[in-house]
Structures are given as C-alpha cells and as structure tokens.
Length: 327
Image (cartoon, rainbow, N blue to C red; front, side, top):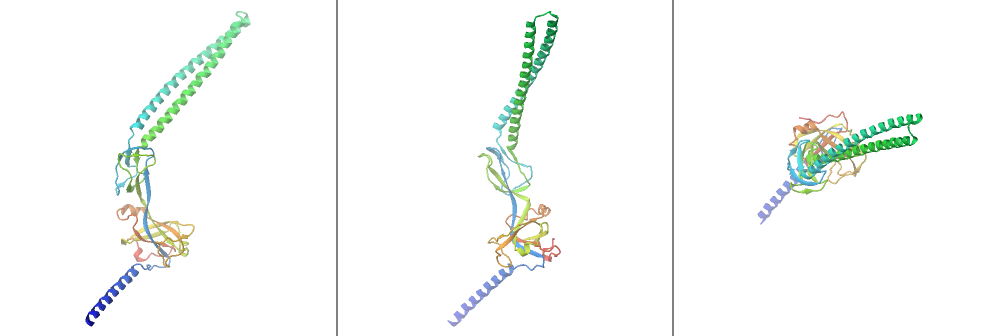
C-alpha cells in the first residue's frame, strides 16, 4: 500500500513539474522583448483597407467573374449587368437628338426667310416714303407698307425664338443621351484597385437594387497594424519614422514599415491590448503601415488578421536590435 501511494505521489509531482514548466515557458514566450532605449512596441493584428464594390444602377446581374481569394487588377472588368433595356433607351435618346437637330435646321431656315422678308419690307417702306413725298402714291399705301414691315420684324423675332427652342431641345436630348450612355457604362463594373477578393456578396441572375454590394476587396497596397502606446512613449513617436513588424506566424521575418498615424488624443485601452504595465488606463493609438514595395514582393505571405508585434522608434538615433534588422 505504501509502495502504491509513493508511485502515485511521484506521478502527481511529475505532472505538477511539467505543468509548472509549461506555464513558465508560456510566460517566457509572452515576456516583453528586451529592447534598447528608444524603441517601443505594442501588439496588434495586420489589417488591410477594405473596399466595397457596389453597383450604381439597379438591374439583373449578368456576370460576376472573381471568387473569394481571387486577385483582381485595377480597371479589370469584374462584373456586368443586363443592359438591354438601358441600351434601348439610349437608342431612343439618340433618335431624339437627331430629330431635335433637324428641327433646329428647319428653324434656322425660317430665320433666313424671315430676315429676307424684313429686308424686303424695309426697302418697300423706304420707296413708299419717297413716292409719298413726291405725291405719286397715297398715305394709305405707306401705312400698309409700314404694317408689313412691322409684321416682318415680328416674324423674324418669332423665327429666332423657334431656333432657341430647337437648340434647347437638342441640348436636353443630348444630355439625356449622355446620362444613358454613362448608365450603360456603369453596367460594366471595374475593380477600383488592385486587390484580393475577401467576400463575394451576389451571384449572377439576381436582380439588385442601386447601391447593392457585389464584392468586398482587400487593398493589397495598404496593410497596417494598429498598436497602443502609453503617453510617455507615444509622445516621442514621429509620423513618418521607420518601424518594424514581426508576426507570430513568421518570427524570423521582419516586415519593414512606417508610422503613418499617431492619435491626437488618448483613449481607454482595448481589452485585448497587453503592455509592459498590464493595461494602462489611457493609451494613444498608433498606426504602422507595411512598406508597399515589400508587400508587392511578398503578397502571399501576409494575410489580414495575423497577430504580431510592431516596434517603433521613440528616439530617431536608437539602433534597431539584431533581431529586428531587415534581411
């Protein structure tokens, strides 16, 4: 019985030692890294700017090429809407433009004729005035010629007004045609940026309302990590200064980065943030952006949501430690 108890005791002691070693190893792994003066750090997750691709006009979705995880290039056509109805309206608008242009030419011809009538009426009136002075015709004939000249002037004014109305009709029809042409162009959707598809939110055949989202894209050129630093350190961080990021999944890969934002005021620390002094009550948010040239060469390595640590200079003269040197 004593031997059995002794063996169990040994087993319990061994398990306790293993557990203690495990806790100690975890604590060692989570310890604050030893850094020189002038370098601060914080933990966070890689984030990429998300862009929603939505339709401007409603209609039936004819095609949607990319799937989740696919890479799309800026200005690549990724989706199209059924545009038959809009195309028919565009043809009608173009016909209205041609009709309005014909009416304008007709009105301009009317102006030419009215101007000719005015010229003739003025010459006739002038001759009548000379003949009345010589006593060859009566004043009644002069009055008729004067009325004719006034009627010709009114006819010319009316003809010019018809030209203005016809030109306005041309402009209105042209504007409608341009609007419909733009709408037709909007039925072919292009990727606004070079990106990776995060979500595919619609399928071909669906009838969508204006503003419906089709894809959520991740901007592959704007990957960053947000960390939180206490006042004593955040106040020394300069925007534009170099930074480093080390991801938990890639401990041997140092990502070059730049500080692009330091919050102008403090905020309460999020619960998931760990600092040297547990959780500071008030911290400053700092945004560190991964170098775009490095991202272009390592596109498949970095993924949104990957946890890691970001390191920033609080002293521009401080050297980077060996483990944070770029390789």
